[in-house]
Length: 72
Image (cartoon, rainbow, N blue to C red; front, side):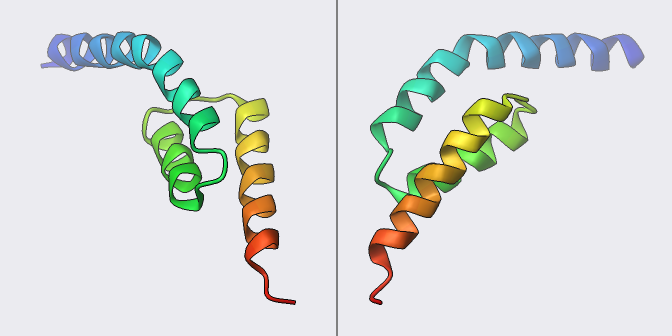
């Protein structure tokens, strides 16, 4: 069972590596979409992607979107 778990984890890591460029493109495309930015954060957490500069950029985008929607 341990070998199956480790094999599954390796497959998961390889798939995450291959999908990351697509995710990065989606982050840039959905720059002004609050749901898109929040989904990107959730996907990064689910895939255990540790890229502080991307997370920081996402949070900046989210703050900018929220500031633009603020009626004050």
